[in-house]
Every structure is written in C-alpha cells, then in structure tokens.
Length: 158
Image (tube, rainbow, N blue to C red):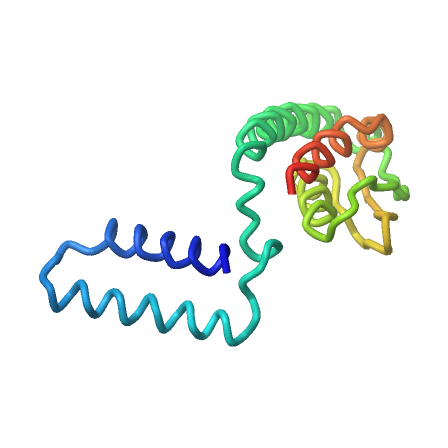
C-alpha cells in the first residue's frame, strides 16, 4: 500500500509541475487520470519494492558520481588504445562473479559494466557474468571488485 501511495504522490507532483492550468476542472481531470493510472498499475501488479526502488534514493547519487568518474577514465583509456592502434588492444572474454543478491542489484552491476567503455556484459547466469573487454586490464579491474563492492553497498539499502 505504501508504494501505491508514493506512486500517486509522485504522479501528482509530476502532473502539477507540468500543468500550466490549475482550474478546478483541470485539477479534477488530473486526479481522475492519476487514479486511473494507479488503478491499472495496481491491477497489473507492477507496484512493488522492485518496480519502485525508493530505497536507492540515498545511495544512488554517490554511486552515480563514482560511476561517471569511472566512465570518464575508461573513455580516456579506450581513446589512448585507439591512438596506439590494433596491436595495443587485447580483447578477452571472462566470467566475473557478482555478489549481489537481488535482481535489481545484478541489473545495476551488469549495466554499470556495459556503460563503462571497453567492456560489455554479454550474458548473466545466476551470479556469473560473461564480460567482453577490449583490454585484459579492464577485466583485472573488474576482478579486483571495486564496482561489485559499490553496487552491493547500493543494493544493501533495499
């Protein structure tokens, strides 16, 4: 029930922020449309702790800042190896073990790997991620576990 109320409040805030007309008719139409959306979402059973992970609200900004820095550094590394030519790259597939317990945590980790230039999560089976990297050192960085540890810390709030 808490998630339904939070969804209703979020939709109402979004609607009010985007609406330029606050007459009684428009407010009632907004209430009816928000109620309709919440009713349909509730009937579809898509309102739960996974679909609306409000628990990430506190930890995700710090993780996002760290990931942005990592993306920037990986971009510089990829550009360096583009300039050095094909002989400087060492493409490799490796299996990385993830320590996340929830689906959401695994998705955040897999997407973080893919967002980082030079690495792509190709397959996920349980807690094993098949990752392709342009450089062996990128795999070594993943195996060191810094990203895994940070995603697990974000996930632990939920």
